[in-house]
Image 1: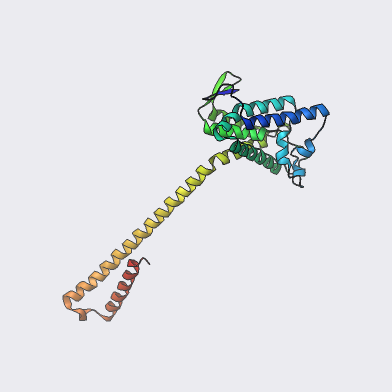
Image 2: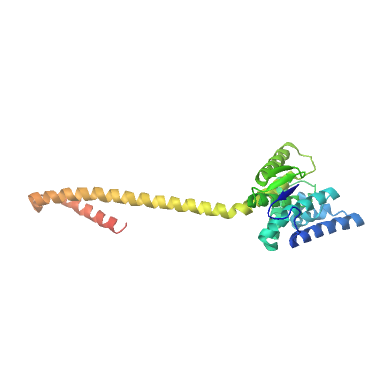
Length: 267
């Protein structure tokens, strides 16, 4: 799996991606050499996380269950993470990476709060990177198995659909599909939050303007009706003299004039 863009086919590794790969690989090698099992304590074990092991949504991202698990995640991190870090810079890239990874872990723990099974791996963050790549470079071709070309936007839609269907149809697969979906969800929210806010603000402004226009039209219609009634009374007084107005008509003229004054003052 690879992508073609203005970057190289085999992209030059960027600083943050390099250090993430080194840390994950170093921890895996240390575990392998010294036969240390940190999964329960440093992996994301939902029942322990909700009991106070609050570091687990961070530490679980640096643990991997096997060499192929590690190689796949690091390969995807290299292929797609370098493009994002080259676009954003190391600081923003790392912020996004950890938001997706931590968010994915917490969502997975929320779905299975009593589970004693630890979740490990950087897949949640990796799936967030895939979502960001598809949003930033939707037309870029990703070559599955190095052969089949698929546009990034369709590739990620397909991956998301597969993960969702797998999550709802299997319960004991040994793969944290909810964490994968969580990484994509947090990646989507992070990437689109500003657009959603601007869209919401724009709709509010339009609604406010429409409301203001309705108020103006209502006031204009009321003023027109008041003016017609006042004109009729004035016409009668002009034709037959002021004394021709009855006491009731004089009172109505006073009230109409007062209301007209209020409308003129914007009340």
